[in-house]
Amino acid sequence: MAATCPINFDVESLRAQVQAEYDRVAREPHGDFHFHRGADYAHEYLYYTREDLNRVPTLASDRFAGVGNPHRIGPLYPGEVVLDHACGAGMDVIIAAHRVGPTGKVIGVDMTPTMRDCALEAAREAGVAGRVDVRAGFYEELPVADDSVDVVISNGVINLAPDKNRVFREIHRVLRPGGRLLMADVVVARELKLEARSNPDIWAACIGGALPEWELPELAAAAGFRNGRVTEHFECFRNTSAERKVSKDLRVHGVNFFANKQYEIYYSP
Ligand SMILES: C[S@@+](CC[C@H](N)C(=O)[O-])C[C@H]1O[C@@H](n2cnc3c(N)ncnc32)[C@H](O)[C@@H]1O
Image 1 (cartoon, rainbow, N blue to C red):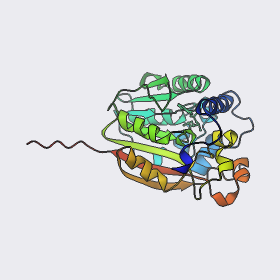
Image 2: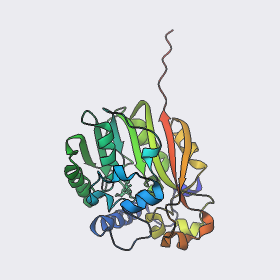
Image 3: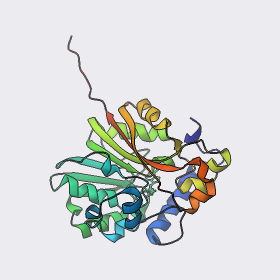
Image 4: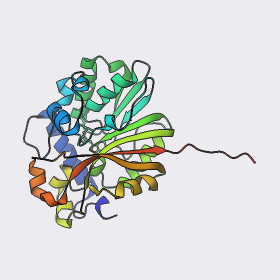
């Protein structure tokens, strides 16, 4: 699996660079970045509805850096427990909190403290803090119990992971049997050159670690998921410097992806 591991830099320094990049997004959301952010981007490129966006404080939506739209993959139901395994400033967390209602719960995990602070404060501003739980942690080692959540949301983050198999296994561990993965991530139509994959700036911009699209169902299946399939494509890097840097013919784009954890079937003798 060629794209899963960066070549010329170690995992700890990559993680530090990724954290520094998203700390900067949290502190300077209107700064200069290789990728789009914000509510207008979410609406125009990823088809978030204005109705959903109007219920999200700008503290969260200005810092939104997703690449697809998990809410278009399938519904969330009142009372469900949802995990966003790298929630950033919490835009998807707040939309999910409105969907699951007062009897549901949304857990957001993120490794960047400034992002978590924004997510918590935005949940308070949105009036959903009572059903939102923001935790410090890594998606390689989630601070979440086995078989405890109905849905995992993921938006723009698995491409950042050097060990993608491990991230899928963690999602599978925390989902209850029958639970759903509603994921958006960056993929490439052609494998990236070693030079691009080994550049930590391009990795932290969500491109260096992007998988070829056809590998997503394989990765999910290897972790035990069923029914893995891409459901929609997004031109999330259109008009960005990232698109120009790695050349348009790579066709870097966002996808929505669905999979679910199989029910266990017990046979009695
Ligand atoms: C591209 S942003 C996406 C955030 C959010 N999902 C959104 O749509 O705005 C990437 C986020 O992943 C977080 N992140 C990156 N690597 C992580 C890891 N190993 N564990 C937990 N969070 C991580 C970063 O802190 C950052 O907030």
